[in-house]
Amino acid sequence: MATGLSRVELNRLARLGAASRLAELEREIVALRRAFPGLRAAAGEVVPMSAPQPPGKLSARISRRGRRKPMSGAERKAVSDRMKKYWADRRKS
Image (cartoon, rainbow, N blue to C red; front, side, top):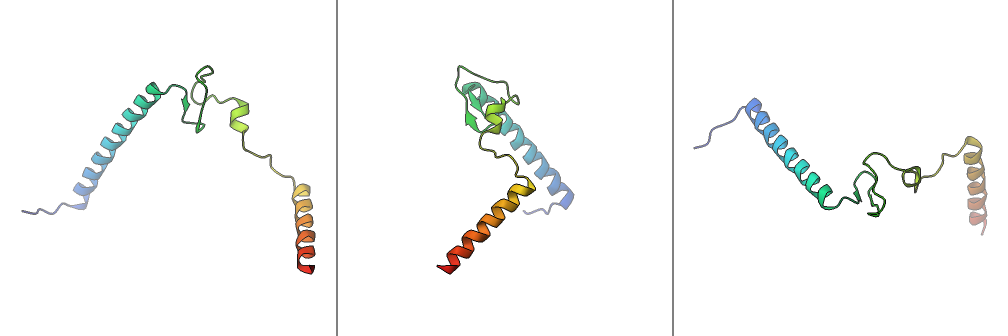
């Protein structure tokens, strides 16, 4: 026997399911953080156990790794001119 659910009822059930899944995931995250205290989820890297840092308090060295400083307008223009010359030379040969 199939009973049709209204959109409101279907939406309410979907929200309940999503809230239940979210709570389950949060419990799993807590368990993982307890099992692996040196794992830094915020930074996406593993920190040695000898130097644990509180979550959200990344040192400047870690937070700046892999990032470049923004180029100034003059630097962008210099790169543009250099690449235009490079491609012009490539087309000639």
